[in-house]
Amino acid sequence: MSDCIFCKIVAGEIPSARVYEDDEVLAFHDIHPFARVHVLIIPKAHVASLADCAPDHQALLGRMLLLAPRLAKEQGLDAGFKTLVNTGRGGGQEVFHLHIHVFGGGDPVRRT
Ligand code: AMP
Ligand code: ZN
Image 1: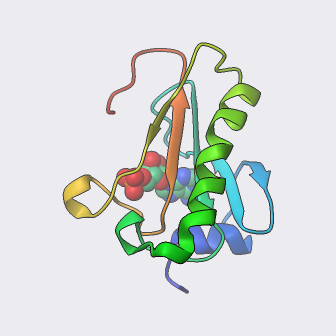
Image 2 (image 1 turned 90 degrees about the vertical axis):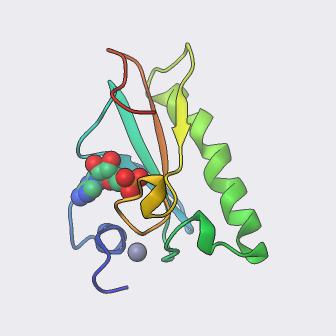
């Protein structure tokens, strides 16, 4: 999607602080972190939200979720971390390209 900010990050048209990449998935630091560590895990292919996923996204979703503890550990969140998937406007989603927030550490978070 040409007007999608996360598709532009995947394409390298917008810079990001990448922490992980494979053929299907990208992870990078959130630009407005609400914890000491706050990364976003996204599919490289555009999917608007969790509500737009279909059964053929099952493996992709599993890959994304399994990446969360690995990245949290790499980022030093040894005591644990939070995951968050905002879905739809009523769910607080602002960027309509599926993403998993992985965050923790530091001061208490401002939203969960
Ligand atoms: P959500 O409200 O779940 O849609 O979250 C969108 C997240 O994307 C917010 O936490 C933003 O801070 C983050 N975000 C928006 N633009 C960028 C960007 N260019 N690089 C990194 N994170 C971004
Ligand atoms: Zn997109």
